[in-house]
Structures are given as structure tokens and as C-alpha cells.
Figure (cartoon, rainbow, N blue to C red):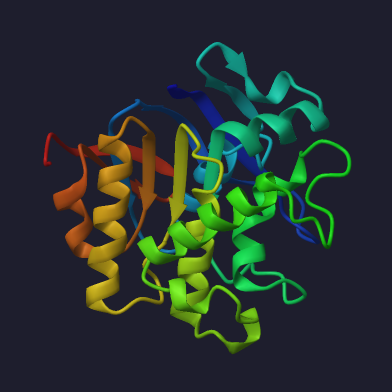
Length: 240
């Protein structure tokens, strides 16, 4: 699958001051299956806003986003949620693990959201549930924290929680992966682990977007864009 942004724009109202603020000027971007695209830029430049629009999480003021031939923002809330769950993985900034679930259960959550009635309930030991658990542990091993599968999120460091979010984003094997500063809390070794994982995921056929300040990430990208004051520009191509 490919993801297309066509003339997407985002304007916010200024609270208490009147007027509007354009955080994202009209932008075009194509995420192609098998390619990794990087966007760099300072904090507040509009990178995360664009990523959220691409992920179906933030309605643009103008323009459209298409997953192949499907326009995301013409769908109702339920249909859009199901499309995101099945086809688009998002690694958000910050720590988003649910404290009431174990690490493995947090990773399994996307696969449980739209299961058939009765599946995935507490105490369910069906083969389906076992397969989900095995998949979650496999992903946690891929990001180097398989031994923490049964821990509570409160017992994890910031970097470990970031890797939980990475594993969770891959649970449904999405065709599109959007990563917002996925290496923000990681040391050098784990930064390289994650960048290699994203590169491999693209090589395996997914369309991958990486929003990052990480200077070495460009070596893993097929195209590099720069965002400045809401304006997106192509910076480099064919760097991988």
C-alpha cells in the first residue's frame, strides 16, 4: 500500500487572541511501499502535525490523505478507526502504555480491539490468544525487551516504554508505519537497533515515515525531507 498527502494544510485558531496560525502550509508527500522517508526539523516546525494527519488522527484544514484509493477523511469515525487499526501503525511521542495492563498486553492491544465477540476476554486461553501473546513476545524480543513481557509499565524506564510503543505499532503488521521520534529516549546501541528495524520493515515491503532529530538516521532513508516553520521541502534523495 502507498499513502499520499495532497495539499494538506493545518490551521489552528489562536485562543484568546483571535486570528489563525498556520502550523502546516500546503504539503504533498508520498509514502511508497518498500521505502523509508525521513523528516527532520526543529521542534514546533510542524513535523508531528503532518504525521498525525497522515495517520488519520488529525483532520487537515484542507487537502486530502489517501491510502491507495481510499480518502481517509471521507470515512466515518468507526470505519477510519478500523482502517488505522488494520493498515497504519503509529509510534507516538511520549509514553502511552496503559498501567492496568502488562507490557505484553499493551503490545497485544491493537489486535484485541476488533476481535470477534468473546475473543480476547480475561481468562481466554484459546489458540488465538496464545498466538497473539507469542507475536507480542516476538516483537518485544526484536526491540530487546522480551524479558520484560510480564512486567507492569510502571517498572520500565522511559527508553523501555518507547520500545514497548514500537513493538505495539507492529502488532498488526501494518502496511504503513509512522514513527514520531522513536529513538528519543534511547542510547546509541538501541537507537541503531530501532533504525535497523525500521529499515528492514521498509525493505520487507512497508511504507515507513520516520520523524526524527537523530543525525545518523539519514543513512537509513531513501528520501530526506526538512520541515521549517510549517513548510516541507525535499532535502535529499537516494541516500540509502
